[in-house]
Image (cartoon, rainbow, N blue to C red; front, side):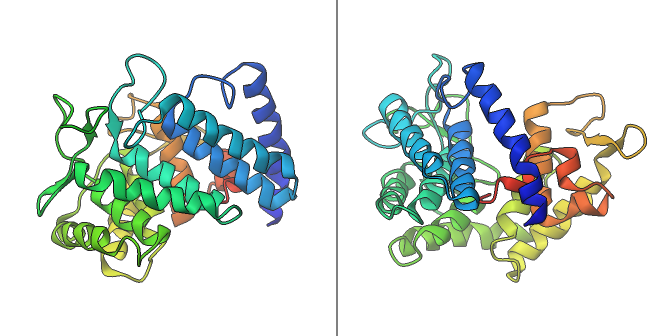
Length: 279
């Protein structure tokens, strides 16, 4: 908790800067960013017990539905080229609603309803989960196939939301996970960080152990030293860096412990990771 408290001023300063620059939460809507932002605001509310952060989280949710909400699901983003729906964006939004729902129960119900609304559009029985769908969920988005990790994401998220209400959907995802995890392989920093995050919710289950162990080994090999006590995670090749993916490769391993094994505290690599308590 001390580490979290130490980093809160840094987070608040960065949040204020983003507001001033109209980046977030008052910028263009983007479901992935908004989901993580809602988690951040809920974390700040829980840590500081200041009602304004809860109110802002609710305001973001309302605006996301106003801008991105569709009869079934939510559009990827507000920009014209961010059309369609991603399953892994939707599950992050479900998770954000779930966290807010721990304070305001009506949001938990919305998360469960969202899961039920979109599940069968993305789920291909016995095969996998479609990565991207058309905006009205009438069919797959041209040029996109199955998501490599989406069924793990669904399996974890559904269980966190409501194991009883989503029991049938959980069974669908569980069958895919059980068929895949023994041959699991991932070499991309974004996906590896996601795997460490997903696996920490059910750490004693065999599929989670496998994902965690293999992800940690691969991620450790992707650390590129850049001087005394510094460096970064590469995305397959050291010369090709993607900041968005590096963030995921640091935030998620901070949960799993890979960063600590490199001798770098998560707060040093990415200073406000510690207060994203909901993540």
